[in-house]
Image 1 (tube, one colour):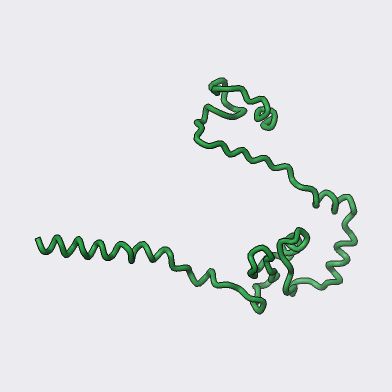
Image 2 (cartoon, helix red, strand yellow):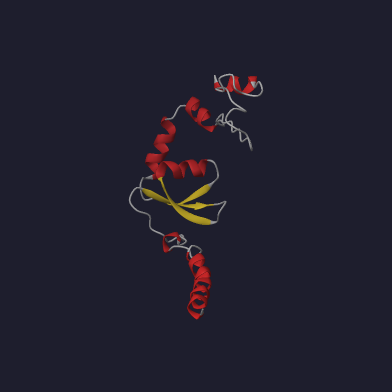
Length: 137
């Protein structure tokens, strides 16, 4: 009787320890600061929405800066003169097309079966969805 009780108490005391292991963050997620050195080909960017620093490729960093998501802190990959010449080579039509919003539609139904919604229901669907069918075409 005493051995079973000892096993039970030991098991119960181990459960919080086992569950707490997943809560401890890994050291790989340590915060970066403005003195962080990125690897070759990467640029240090300050994320304005999260108030932290991240290393990105030059192209991604420029996109983030264009859309106001981040600010380039250190740029060791290119000279600013080369960047200026790239901007001058881009036609106005290209610049306008990259600023336009993409056409993305997300349909998130809840608690539906495979036969309820969609363009590819093969006659099994319980209702008609001409708008979804038109999007799929």
